[in-house]
Length: 318
Length: 57
Image (cartoon, each protein chain N blue to C red):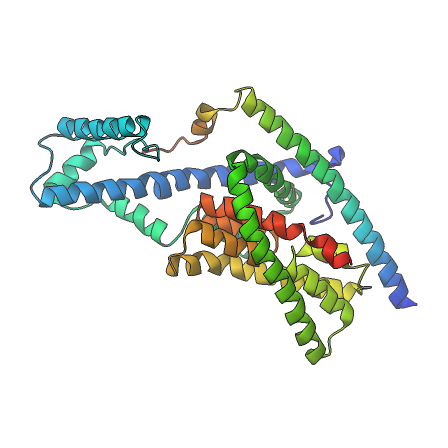
């Protein structure tokens, strides 16, 4: 339980409140950044690029009012097509530039710097996940977390669980079944592969059976929970247990910061990336962070695959 | 002897952590249920989510 705080103990709540509120404030500020820079400014860059192209081709709207009208009409037409069943995907509302940005593009034949900044931040995947993770790590390793705030930082952790439950509202049964079956195949291969590889490698390295058992379960299934569940079965020593957990969490941290960039470099589809993350990253919190970093669809797929993987815990008990 | 004592302490700590985590899971389920109910009742809707964001283009 983190730094020894029992979250269900009401008497400890006042102690947790300051840190929890600071975490909430930090998260809220970063969400503002994400919505504005990664969301609005990035969409603005696409729209500004489109407008700039029409300006360069001499097809730009004569006035701002004409530009707004053209954008709204184009949306109306797309919506009608969707309502008639000619388009499968509902069109999203058009991004309409503000007058000052429209004038800037038309007069200077250039994209305003703020839009380029948003596009660059999106390109480098500096989303809210990255800012929160890196920000937290920088604070922790430079100025440190004041003692009064420390219990509250642990209180922020369990919110990830109801978050995942509520995420269930996004799933369609058909998608869950489709992803679940593909996930099942991936997970069977991964769990068996990890168990065989670790056993062979462990025998060569002459490592303890307990440690190998914990690592097989932890790496093959779902990290810490699986290691805890099988510890009594494989008769693991406390030292083995901490080695296994350390390895799992260290590997997860490494993956968390590298997978989104590898996925981007390989131009992986969100669903493919989600399946990869859901299979390879063991700790649920790290998995959710790495998948969210990449995109919402990746998160949905990664969660289903993760649930399938967790379902394999009882197999290690045998 | 010392190793057995360490193992015993470790098992006690693991049991306590596990039971605290189970209690935490029940609390989490209650929170999630309340949120889902609030969404179904229309208390939490798109307007509420939009209101979180004050910095917009």
